[in-house]
Length: 325
Image (cartoon, rainbow, N blue to C red; front, top):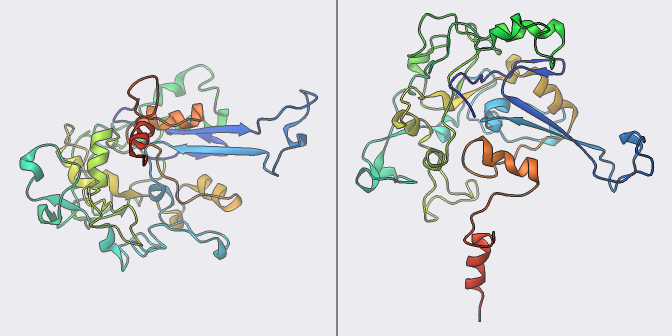
């Protein structure tokens, strides 16, 4: 579960993370003749001995790797920088319009629930809804750990002080986050979160991570109207910010469009891992929704599915009815 004090900053030292970052180290599932045999000495079907999965909870790939450039050009990458949506310095790029955010000018379906909105229902934002503090306080919510005997056993002594950093230093807990450069006049699309007044290890407002709101934010039409070679899903993502402003917690506004800038030194440990190892830039969340269902495939090596009876996946039942006779 998450509170609105969830840190968007992945506070990383040499091997430790004080933010909402979970790391699972999975070793090859093989039997060794001697249980004391080191993992690196176990014979496996491929040269791969370890698979390390880092889950940046409630974060998109571009939130962290928006401006990442691979060490070897032949590797290639698809992110906000390579697509020309933003420049290396975090400013809007020549294709910034591809990530434009729209407000709902007229509610689809007479204002009833909807999963997509036609272009006639949308109006381009003049400026992005200002990202809100959304309950984040002047000091770190984890500062109490610093005073515990021994602190957190998961961090070395020299890193315990990190639990006391990241607060806003502001007197209010709601309203535009004034640490963000130009917060009240951001262009209607992705923006660099970090800057002179917003260090990488700071706390910022939490975002929506629930099923129905995520469906609306994806803005996927029921037909193939917007399907193309460059957009095979047909989803527009026009309503990321519009949905947050109409959610039951109205202070979740433009936060969803924020990104870190690795060209400016953000997320150094994640950049180091990407530099040293193979990385997938085409990972998609297994299911819409919060942390629980999204983590099930990782913990149980199985996917979440709908069923009618006997735990049989609903999709399989539908496909059986569609088989030719």
